[in-house]
Image (tube, rainbow, N blue to C red):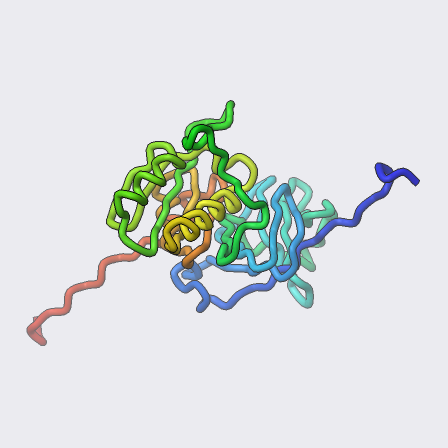
Length: 255
């Protein structure tokens, strides 16, 4: 039998729902988080063990979400079609009596406390990051450092991420179209690994098509982690992070 004729089984990622207390800022209302227990691929996304999937709202036609059983059964990725729900990978239709959509996949997170599996991901040309041809301007990348931005760090980052700008003593933002070529999680992880190797700094990365969503993702990311917001989910991702200012208590009891 020729190798090209061998049908390989789908690598179905195993998911585990996490309690709302894991990420309370995200889990307000209808937000949910699932952890990947066993790696696999689904809907053109490669999921590794330990990845977090952020889910919110509901899915429309052709949108990817997480299916949960109405009885016994493990969560799995799925797509809403005109005929109902379809699990991914595999493309098998699911009974609405057995399965329901818990929400749309709006972001993915990955920890990079160790070096990314793919090695060097940022491509360099004469110390300046290369923009692959044909990509639109964007997405936005937000970077939070575990220490103050020194002149050496600023110069080093400017050679790797075009037009990166500091917005606070520890945070920078930039538009980096190459972050959506391939896997934005791996590209962010490569940047985290290089900062650790060169400066001994921890860093977190948020990636989204809109700067506000990238910063909102950054505020949820743990040290040495990347959160990549799915295209079209920017507004849904930002909304649960908005916190109303606390009312000021009166100094006079009857006031």
